[in-house]
Length: 330
Image (cartoon, rainbow, N blue to C red; front, side, top):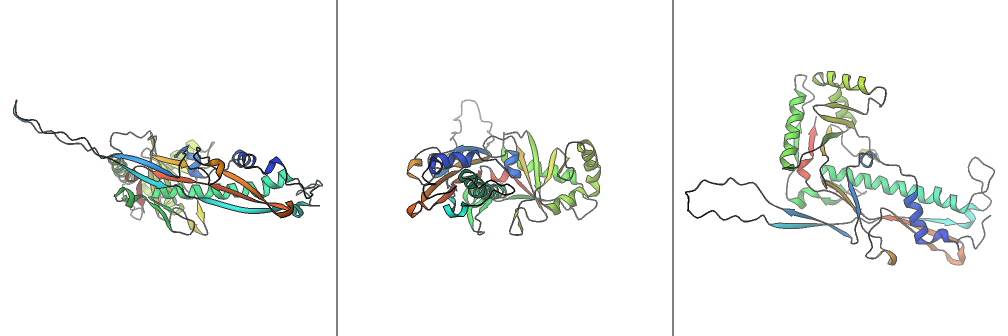
C-alpha cells in the first residue's frame, strides 16, 4: 500500500531508473530490426566524420628520365554533427496508486509495476519511435525534428546532391530490371571500392504495390512469394534483380515516413555507412562518460508525495555517404 515514504527507495535513483529503462522489452522499428545502423556511445555531444577526398587520376606516360608529375595526397577534412536532445517527463503521485488495483486482478498496484509499465515503458517507446524517424531521415538525406524542422541536412553538410532514378511504373513496357541495375550502378559509383553484401529497397506502400503489380515484375514476385509462403508475410517483401523490396509502414500524425510513390535503395554490409552515436545525458553523473541509448532520472516532489520522472536519449543518426542511397520514384 502506498504511503508518504514510498518514494524514498532505490527504485528512484538515476542508476536504477536508467538500468530499468534500458532493460525494458525492446520493440524495434523496421530500421532497427534491419540493423543497418552501427551503434556506439560517445563521451561528447557531437559526432565527427572524417573525410578524405582522394580521387582516381590517370597517370600520363612520359619519357624516361623526364621529371615525374607531383602526387599530392588527398586532403582530410572533418564534419561535426550535434546529438539531438530527446527528453520526456511525467509525474507519479503516491495517491495515484493508493487503493488502485492492477488491471484485471484483485492485487493492488505496486510501485515497481506502475513505474515500469505506466511511465518508463511508454516513454521508451516514444524515444525509440523518434530514433526510428531520425534514421529514416538519415537514409533520405534530411533528419527532421518532430515539428518538421530540419535538424541535419546531409546534402548541405556534404555538399552533394541526391541521386535518383525514375522507375516509370506507369508504363507497362518499362524494363524494371534495367532500372534496378542503373540504380545499383549509381550507388556503386558513390561507394567506390566498397562492395555491398546485399541490397534492400524500403518502399512506400503505394510504390510497393505498383512495383509488385508491374507486368515485368509479376513473374519475379510470384516466384518469390511461393518460396517464402511458409515463412513470411508475402506482402512484406519480394526480390528482383538482387534487391529485396520491402514495404515500409512508418508514419506519424498521418504523414508517412516515406512518401507515396517513393522508395530508397540501400546497399548493405558497408562498414560505417550508417551510424548511430549516443551522447551522454545532461546529468552530473554522466558528464564525459560514454553515452547510453536511454537515460532516466527522478526528482522528488515536496513532502515526498511523488516523483517527477524523466527519460531522455541523445542520439545522432548519420549516413556517411549520402549519395550511396538512391531515391526511386514511380
